[in-house]
Structure formats: C-alpha cells, structure tokens
Amino acid sequence: MSGSLAIIGLGPGDDRYLTREAEEALASAEALYGYGRYLDRVPIREDQARHASDNREEGARAKAALNHAAQGAHVGIVSGGDPGVFAMAASVCEEIAAGPEIWRALGVRIVPGVTAMLAVAARAGAPLGHDFCAISLSDNLKPWELVVKRLDAAASAGFVVALYNPVSRARPWQLGDALARLGRHLPDATPVIFGRAVGRDEESVMVTSLAEAPGIAADMATLVIVGTAETRLIPRKDRAPLVYTPRAVEKVVA
Amino acid sequence: MSGSLAIIGLGPGDDRYLTREAEEALASAEALYGYGRYLDRVPIREDQARHASDNREEGARAKAALNHAAQGAHVGIVSGGDPGVFAMAASVCEEIAAGPEIWRALGVRIVPGVTAMLAVAARAGAPLGHDFCAISLSDNLKPWELVVKRLDAAASAGFVVALYNPVSRARPWQLGDALARLGRHLPDATPVIFGRAVGRDEESVMVTSLAEAPGIAADMATLVIVGTAETRLIPRKDRAPLVYTPRAVEKVVA
Image (cartoon, rainbow over all chains, first blue to last red; front, side, top):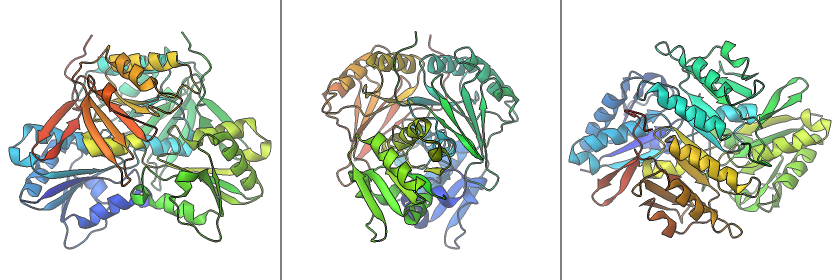
C-alpha cells in the first residue's frame, strides 16, 4: 500500500497564484477531488479521474479521497486559497483522526497557497502591515458568542481583522453584527476593505470606512479586512488610495 | 513618466512557492532591489540591474526603489514570503506617505506570496484550522507591553498564534517570555510547532508542547505556531504526527 493524498492550494482566482509546487502536485495526481468550482480551474486530463462535489460536502469528500488513496492511488484534493485556512486540510485531519488505522499510514502532504486575505491586502496596499488575525464569520460550526468574543479581543488589542465567510444566503446578518461590534472599539473612520472575487475577471476591491461598511454588499466570494485605529490611507490622483497599517506603534492605548 | 514599482513575494524557501504572477513580475522588472539573501534566489539576468541591501535597511531600500521608478523604470522589490506580512509592502507605503508627490503618481503593485505561517502549518497538518492570528515578536518598532497585551488577547479568546521574528541576536529573551505568557492561558500540553527554514534544504519542523517549547532553539529563520486548548495530535506509526485545530467549537470557555 503506497497511496498518498495531497491537499493542494490553488490560491484565489485564476491560475496566476498557482505555485510551482501546486502545479507539480496537480500533475502527479492520478485522481482529483474537490468542490466543483475549484476543480473547474484545473485543465482536464484524460488519464486523471475527477470527482466534483458540493461546497458543503467537505467531510464526505475527505473520506472518499482517503479511501481512494488507501487503495494505493496518488490522490489530490484541490482547495481554493490555502488548504489550511478555513479549507480542506482541517477537514481531512478530522476524518483521519476519526477513521480507520489505514488512513494514518498514508502519506499526506499539504501544498500551501496564497490565501484570500493576502491577495486582497495586496490589492489595497499593506493593510496587514502589523499584527493581524483571521476570523471566519460562519457560525455553522461555532457559537456566535465565540465570534463576538474574538472580535472584541482582536479589536481591543489592536489587531487588523480579516473576516472570512462574511455572508451566505443562510447567514445574512452576521457581517453587519460583526462590523457593529468592531465599531465599539474602533473609530468610524477606520479603513475597511471589501475584496470580491480577487484574481478573477469580475474582481472588485472597494476601500471604505467602518461607518460606511454596513452599506456595502458582500457574499461568500468576499473577504473583508477591517483596519485598526492606526491604519491609514494615502490618497492618490487618478489611482485608488493605498491602505496601510504602519509597522511602528509608539505607545499602548489603554 | 511611466515608471512602476512591483513588490514581489517570493514565498519562503526556494522557488517551489513562486507563483506565476511573481515569475511574470520578476521577468518584467528592469531592476531588482532587495535583501541580499532574497535577491540571491532570483537567477541573474544581464539586462536586469540588481541592488542588494542589508536586512535592516528597509526604509532606504524602499526610497531607492521609488526614486528609480520615478525616473521611469519598471522596478521590482523582492520580499521573502508575502510582502504584506511583516515585510516590504508596509515599508514602501510608509515612504510614499512621507515622500514627494511624484511617488504617489507611480503605479504600485503588490504581488502576494505564501507567507511562512502557511508553509509551516502545511508541514505539520492543519494547526491554523480555525481562527488564528499573527504577531511579530520584534519590539524594535513597538513596545513589548503591546506584544504582551496581544498575546493575552489572542490566547484568552482561543486564537491559534503564529509568532514571527521570534528571536534575533539583539532580542534573545522575547520568545521565552511570550511562551510563558501564553502558558497563563493554555494547558502545558498545547501543541507548539517550530518550523525553521521551511522550503529550503536545511528545513526542520518540530512538534512539541507548550511546556517543552522553551527548550527548543529558534532564530530569525524560525516561525513558531502555538495551538489552542482544542488543537490535537494524530500519532502515526513511522510518520510525524499530524497537528490540527478542529473547525468545530462546541461551547465558549469563560
């Protein structure tokens, strides 16, 4: 039994963020599993089986891929962004922990990728220029009160906050509540960035303020970055402003 | 005047993490600036000028590159990892904010890359599987009491913590103090990962516990990830354990 499983980060958007390691891992896989929209980014090859599944079927997809690898195949699971950031790597580990002993004998390799907050930040300037955190606003797997606790902790300690999974059809109010919560700690003028579909043709990046942010539309393809009281804009003629968080902090705000 | 500046993330280690966009940006630059060890990763081209500088000369490097671009050249600054994460993007923005008007007219493009915490996490499993933060332990540009405040906030709210710049010759005690501080909130058995020189030949990744972590050597090439009370190990025969932080959290710990 010499099967293996590679969990391959494609980065956000099209193939511009694909790393050499990811290209090599895609090339060497005998079968690919993944959410259909991510699999669609990988060119079809006749000798490579493809198993597309729905966005929400992470556990079932991980199990199917592990079973396939346990039969001796070199299997890949594709993941948007980075597989370790709110994506397939944790799901696969959870299945291995709960699954048959043979899954623990498999070679498992995670191929990192550019995660959405890095791509959105790059479009805007350097908003993550200082200490920062990433929070998923999905309360499917954790209580909302824990999200609130983390928003309070992050904003009061001066972390820039990247919000993943801000809105879905089943979760329409979470982003608005989160922005309001952050507003308890941060000035109205705090820069906020909405990055949607970054790396794709329909990409849009909007720089706004915490006071104006609740009026901006967002969906599951959106990543939101909320700055700190130190985050600044550089206005530029005929160009979008640059947003950055300075590296230096003079003193601790109580 | 049609000069431009690209700040190009090379990812950690060798060229395995180079994205297509970064390759294209390197290819189109007429001149490259950067810390010598990062520039050394880029193959020399006779028609491309190279300006290496010391690790600490970020401001001077940014100014020199901006001046060069303002003369009409297409200039690149190379950055290890991702330029927006404790790297050159914020430094360039700071110089633009303080510099001459002509710098604001330049096209500035940031090319994101795989940052060290993603590469180290990938080696270990999925330790960033849930909400997480990144903190630089360098107190060159911020007071240590602010680092302590952020460590307290992160650990008490259940964030996985990635520690950048843990140790340097001039800062020998900060990592030990930070681990002790996190230990006020977290169990002794909390998994801790030391990733050193990930993506290079001399790469090493060690999984230990918060109680044992102070005995592990680290330097500026090390990234440390400290889990949460939920972070788990999957022991594997003849393989390193997988470390992961489950996506689901049942309840909020007071």
